Structures are given as C-alpha cells and as structure tokens.
Amino acid sequence: MSKHYSITTQSDRSDRSDRLRNFPRALVLLVALALWATVTAQAGAPVSERPPKTREIYVPISDLKVLLESEPHRVLLTRQEYDELVKKAKKAPETHVPHPAMTVSSDYDITVDNGRAKLHGTIAIDVLEDGLHAVPLDFSGVGLLAAKLDDQPAPLGHAADGRLNLLVSGQGRHRLVLDMVAPLEMNSAQQYLSFRLTNAAVGRWRLTVPGDVEIKGGADVVSRAVDAAAKVTRFELLPRSGDCTILMSLNSHLQRREQAVASRCVLFDEVTEAYEKLHATVTLWILHRAVDRFRFVVPEGFEITEINSPLLARWDIETEGGRKIVNVRLREQTTDTVVLSIAAIKTPSQLKLWRMPRLELLDVVGQVTVLGLLIQNELKAESLTANDLIPVDTAVLTTALPATLVRSDPSAVPLRYIAAYYAPQGGYELKADFSRVPATLAVTTNLLLNIRDKGCEVQGGFALLPTAEKRFGFDFSVPAGWKVIEVTGPDKSPLTIDRYTSDKLPSLVIGRGAGGEGAGDQKLGRVHVKLPQGIAPGQIYV
Image 1 (cartoon, helix red, strand yellow):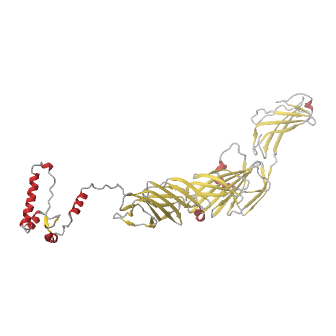
Image 2: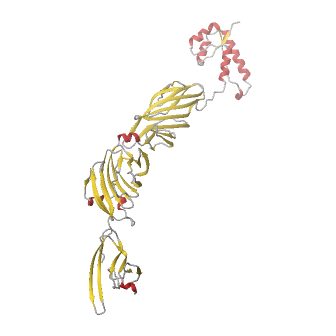
Image 3: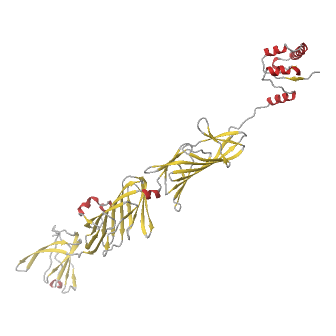
C-alpha cells in the first residue's frame, strides 16, 4: 500500500480541478466516493447543526513535487504537526495589561551655580509585561549630559513626534538616572529658571541656590532654609507638570559685591538738657543691580526708635565688630530711588565735649551729608568747631527737614537752629560745649508819684522781657511804710500776689489786692506776682 500525506492549499477551486484531471482515474474515483459518503451522512442533519466541512486530498508521494513546485504558499506537514497547529488556533486570544511599562516615582536635585542649573534626576519604572517597551520622557529646556538604566547606558531615542523615548525590557522595577543642565536667566531685578521635567505620581524637587534668595513665583515652596556657613539657600518644592518657570530674587552675596548705590543724608541733631535726638532722611540711588536691603551703623550711645519707607518690610539690629548694624529689608527688589526716614535717641545728653554723631551707610559707593544742629532755647553753644565741613545758611534747610522733626508735638521742647554744614565726605567732625543760659528778666520801670495832704500815692508799671525761659511770675520790692493796693495785668484784670514783709523777711503776710494790716506794714516788703499764662522768651509783657 502506498503512503499518503495531508496537504493544505490556498489556491482557488479552478486550480484544484485542473490538477485533479492529471491524477489517475482510480484516485479520482476514491475521492468522489469519499465526498459522496460525507454528503450522504450529513444529508439528514439540520442546516444549522451541520459541522464545518473539512476537505482532505490524498496525493501519492511521488506526485508531491508537482504540487509543491507549482504553488510556493503550500507547506508540507505531518498529520501530527497539522493537528497540533489546529488545536493552537482554537485557543482563546491572549490579553495584555493597559500599560505594560510606566513611571512610578521621580526625584530631582537642582543646583544653581555659575549662571546655570545642574539637574540630577532618578526615575523608577515598573515593567509589567515581557517584551521591549518604549517609555516616553517629557523633557524640555534642559540638555542631557548622561543617562543610565540600571547602571548601564540607557537606550534613548526620539519618536516620530520628536519626543524622547526610553527602551526598556524585562518585568520588574528599573532605575533611570539622568544628569542634565539648564541655563539660568538673570536681569537687574531677579533670576529665573525655565524647564519641563518628567514627573510621576510620587515626586520630589529640591533646589539649592547660592546666597540668601527668595522665590517670587512659579513654584510652591514646601520649606526654605538658609545655610549661612555654605552661603546657600535650600528649597523643597512641589513638583509641577508641564513647563515651569521659577522666579527668584538675586544672589544677595553677589549683589553686595556687584551692586552700586549712591546716597545722600540730611541729618539734624536735636540737643536738649535731657536728651539728644537724631533725625535723618536718607536718599539712595541704585546705580547697578537691584537692591532689597540696606545697612548702616548706629551712632554710639543712640538707640533707633523709628525707620519708615514706602517699601519697608522690616528692620533689625545685629552686632558686628563691636558696632551695632541696622539691616533694613524692603518688600521686593528695586532699582528705583529709595527714601528712608530714621529717628534715634540718646539719654542722657552730653553737653560738655559734645560731638556731632555720624550716620555711616554701608555697601554704598558714595555718601554726602547735610548737617543741621538744633539746641534747646535755654542752651547756648560755646567753642563750636568744625573740620572738613562747609558752612551753609540754616534757612536753606527749612525745606529739607526730616519728617520726624516737622511733626507737631505739643510736648516738644522749644528749639532753635544755630548751625548748618555740608559734608562732601564721611570723615567730618563737629564739636562744641553747651551750657544753660541764665534765666534773666529784662525790666523797664515807670513810676508816677502823687503827693497829697493825707499821704503819697505811686502809680507805676513794668515792661517784662524774659531772655531764656518762660516766666510764670516775678518779684518786686516795696519800701518800708508803703502798702501795695493792687497789681493788674495788660487787660486791667487783677493778678494774684503774695507779700512778704520784715526787716529780713521774718514774718509773712499774704493778701490779695490791697493786702492786710499789721505790724509788718512798716517793715521792708517784697511782693511776688503770679502770671497764670506765663511770658514766653522774647515776648514783652506790659
């Protein structure tokens, strides 16, 4: 008996008819009987229940070459191999996970240095299915320096849409380490960093910037810490998807080295018997680099009581080299002109060997000062000497008085201007001694004597002029044997008087108007007159 093999074919029905005509009649008859038996067996079954037709053609092995050579799409299989392929074809299709590979965490360290930012990132990737997978990486505004996947060079490439893809295979956790660089932009008022990073559901950003720096916008700050030893500011930020631009203030250390600020100071010193008060108006012009803080030295013995400015945020005092330094911080960096109003006080005042205090501004390229000296009306200046100062008219300074000096204060001590100077440099010196002016009273007296049969009568008056301080009373003597009948003021209203009588004033008689009667009337007397409204210095009271 001849051996037969099963053959699968992809040719159409007409091709099979042509080839069957070339087979022996016995083979054709066998095939016809086989087909008739199959049709007869299925004739009685319903159409819906008929199984699919399976046709098999038996070909002598000697004629296989005719079929195989004429049709390249045929494959020769054994019956066992054919049955196994049919079983595999009937299996259910395999299901795949929605995302075979995905990023699960990201961690970035960003360090700003020398006008650029260095970024070190670590991304964790989970692969859930066998095979080679492309993981998209969303980066922009950064330059890639190095990339390693599981400590090996990372296979990276750009897709058709231009995005960077990472090729990864093998189920499990993979670790991608990236080193990148981004440019740092800077202008006169701020510095900013722009980039876009690949972020995962769990992420972390850490930013380190030289100097004392504040973040003005573009990022949500979790924490901020200034490392004074390393001279850097460390931030922890919330990661952001998409394009990110972080706005920051300028490096404070760099600013102090490169900034240029010019200043002018109008300084008035108020000297009284009880205290010495300093009033200053400082105008600062920013010539180069934006500024957000100023520093000056507190004069020795003084305490700062007030600092005002439209842009002022806060001020504090620190000790540096044995000197008290005031740090004035603004709400934001600025390149506009800044005006500071400063007040300081010293108690008690030093009237002997007095020296004009100096307000020394730090971190400025130039400083000029206009000085004004005010003293209490009751004081006078002695031996006033000036070095490296140019005298100016005090009337010129009336339009440049500090705000703390021109404020109305009912309890303020009466003052007067005695000197004003211009200091082109900071090494000036002004010295003086102050003493109290004697409280004298200039008096002009007029008397009219009327002689009568019953006695004599005197009518008179005083013109009083205080020279140093306000007077609330005065005394005059009364000869023995005379009585004071009345003392009136300029408006003819009677004034209260106290009369003292005695050879050496041993007894006291107090009266109003004409006074009292008694033995004391024949003794030497002194009358004290009270002035309820007082007489101001330089005012004539008649």
